[in-house]
Image (tube, rainbow, N blue to C red; front, side):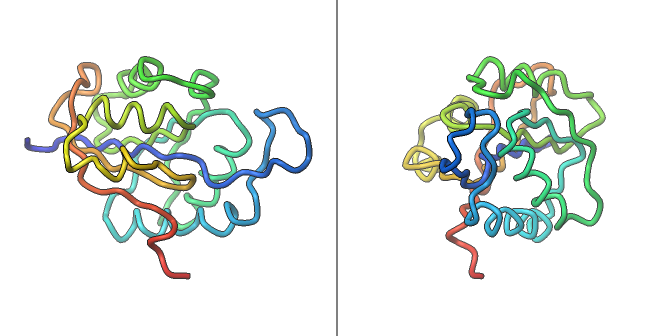
Length: 169
């Protein structure tokens, strides 16, 4: 598969459960605040800087992307999408399929189980996706390559998987 487009599927960093806030308003936990910049540095090292980001409106996803993007040479435009909060595969695919054709690298920032489900939907359940099948932890990101156009996105190949624990502090 010749990759002409790159999809980066991001799960928000570790969130805080302590304040009794509504789920949508939960902030990042100290670990999430610490882990999120590592993803930004990794994206730079991998040469996979998104040209566009579609992010859930939940506080923890917005805070995650803010910390990730602070590590990028120039933060890309971000669209905040209510449909990504609690999104399933069709909603995540719809967000990707609305991407302008000139964008070659897109990031979707969302939640479980949607992020692992859409990754496996596109890349399959083969041996190469075992890390995603095992666990898509908070603060993780899957990098998928596809030759499909955004509006016809059906299949992709998992080419990299970032987990915060793999980065040394």
